[in-house]
Amino acid sequence: MPPRKKLDPSSSPRALLGAELRHKREEAGLTQDELGRPLFVSGSFIGQLEAGTRRMHAEYARQIDDILKTDGFFERNCEAATKSRYPDHFAEAAEAEAVAQTIKEYAPLLVPGLLQTEAYARAVFRAFQPTATEEVIEERVAARLERARLLDDPTTPLLWAVLDEAVLRRTVGSHTVMTAQLRHIAELTHRHRIIVQVLPFAEGAHAALGGSLKLMTFTDAPPLAYLQGLGTGELMDDPSSVAQYHHSYDLVRAGALSPEASLALLEAVADDDEHEH
Image 1 (spheres, rainbow, N blue to C red):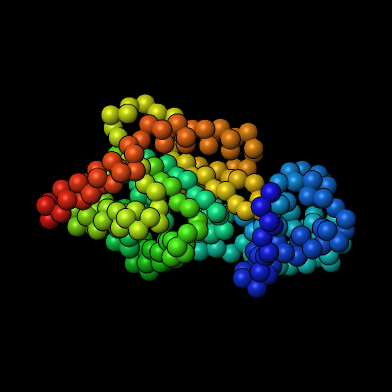
Image 2: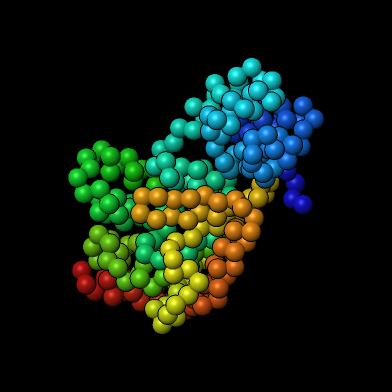
């Protein structure tokens, strides 16, 4: 088992709650399973709260205060810990992503958020919210670019993305925007910062036709799967479900072009877009 990550309580409200929860639970002599039982959640869920990969919601905070006799500490601090720059359906996934060791993603339609350029992200948000103010759009773009700073670290998290060929072929924004976007992905690949494969149209039916899939693993918490739809998303921690999604991802990855062939295709499409300027 990898060493347990030392939480920095000053890094965020979530980290503070997680560190304090771990301390108070151990002080009470309870295992994660024992604390989770009266909350009707698994011990792994408690572990995710402690590790900061899941948000603590008010109903759990109140019950934890009662069980651990913490005089309302968790309820009082819960609101600050649940504030987020992201839409409600994605907030927990973004927070988990920030502390993940590995992120594996299948993207059927759009470049994954961590790989988006500013212009591409702006075009995506404007298409989704055509009547939104510029201020709203720019806030969304800024939050997405902030997420992408995860890749400033030279090694962690490991990001492995399988892009459907449709991601490369659909012109988002303009041919100029697409050229820059594809060149950005290629540059990250050339720097060996990410691994990218392309699932070609010729592959036909595959194991993830139902939609996008993100899988995250952590040093000190169980893995998570995130499924996203139009304005909706679900973060899942059920071990059997997560295992099945890992299996689906492996099947998709097996049907994709090799990383070398994928890079060649990505750069060829970028060249085609550039010639369309």
